[in-house]
Image (cartoon, rainbow, N blue to C red; front, side, top):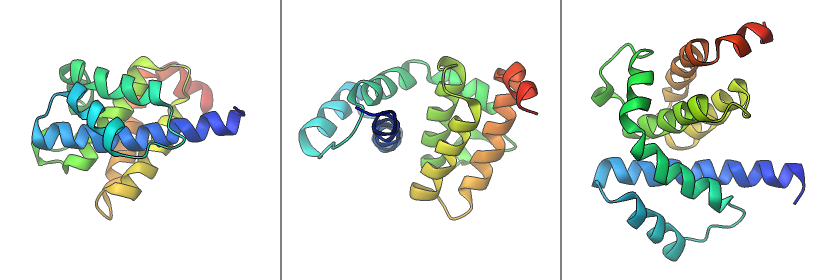
Length: 147
């Protein structure tokens, strides 16, 4: 697979993960059951299945840590956020914390695009601001080096 193909497969994995994490938040289903449902009932074409599975399995396990990271960057209560925006923020926070090989700007850009696709009309602006603050906290040397 080409580098572009790998990148697109990751984009699709994030897209599916946001949908799965939304379902996890709203319905409270077990992440493993959600993974099975996605694999069985949806056409997961061009999706990096390993990355998708890892996000859906690991984000709920790290939920409290990721939520704490994010709450330090929020100007409102976590529960008052739109559930789609929460899902996007969780994926972004996971990548900021655990995937140093993904540049922080890519994490933010991908999150903004996901929010534009699934979130409220202006939600992407909020997600951008929150993840920018999180990048400054979690990836300070990388942020400073990019200025």
